[in-house]
Structure formats: structure tokens, C-alpha cells
Length: 229
Image (tube, rainbow, N blue to C red; front, side, top):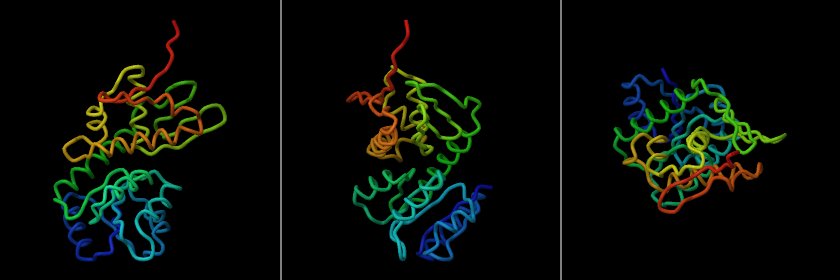
């Protein structure tokens, strides 16, 4: 059974979500102290986190930033706020998805299932290492190393990079990437992919690799690498 931490201060909504997720055999845990969210995440070790933006003491953005400094656990934001910048901020801070309240539970469960399937099936893949532009890509560790420098990617960032370098020097359409990351493109904003790709490039900047992830307007993205003849 997967453990899900639901960081939500609305007790009624918390109870409704917990009841529905329990029917799908997920173990759902809440937060006892909203000033110790990071510590409680570490103590529980959840496989996925659902987090509201508006929380007591510190907002969900703050806690996402704190969690991402220590863990790559998948994070889905829940929010009644509908400003596009909220979604952009959530993704830039390391969120894996964003669900706006009020939501249909079927949409939430579809997103949860897609992320868990992608993250925890993906982590068992046999191929662990790949070379690209002189860098070593460690899929299981979500690590990119070039010479003496390394950067740690989130699951989504690594999956995007994995798909692109498996098709290096070939354009991968936005639709293909969205299907690979989120299974059902009908539930995903096109801007979500853009934010994730931009975040990947930002992570690769210290290694000087960001310029090799190119946008082909109206087509998709391409990871370039010179081919020895």
C-alpha cells in the first residue's frame, strides 16, 4: 500500500479525501503540527504528498521548497486559487502536478495513479546509466554528473531528459512528452510541460548542458549531441 501525506487544514475536506483514497487502498496521513511539516514528512516517509497552498503559519510553496531540499518525493498541489502564476510557482518549486479546487475525485485519483505508476515503476528500470554530451545520467538516482559537478533532478525532470536523450537529435513532440509524463493529456495544461522543461534547463545550467535541450516551435523538443562519423 502506498503512503500518502495529505497536508490540508480544512478538516472536512481532509476527511473526504482520506475516505475516498482509503477506498483505493491508499494509506492517508495528515499533519499534527503545521509548524513541523518537514519533520513529519521525514518521519512518515510518504510515497506521495498532496499539499494545499493556503496553510497555517507557512504556505504550501514554503513547505515544497523545504521538502525539495531533502527529497524527490512526488508532490501534487491542491488549491482553490485559480491564478496561472500559482501553477507556475508550484511547478518551478518542484511540484509534479496541480489540481484546482473544487475538483472531481476521478481527476485527482487519475493523477495520483499516473504519478505513482511512473515514479515507482520507473525506478525499477534495468538501464541505470547513460552518457550524453560527456555527462553521466544516473536514472535511478536522478543524478546528472559532468566532470566533478552533479545536479539532482526531480522524477519529472529526469523522465523528460530520459525521453529526449533516448531520441537524441530527433524532435519529440509535446504531445508525446505529455502522454509519457501524465498518461492523459486531457488533464494537463500545455503550460505545465513548458514549466517542467524550463525547470530542467535551469537545473542543467551549472553543467553547461541547458543549451543542448532545444525548443522547436510548433513541434516539440530535441536533445542534441554530435554524432561521430
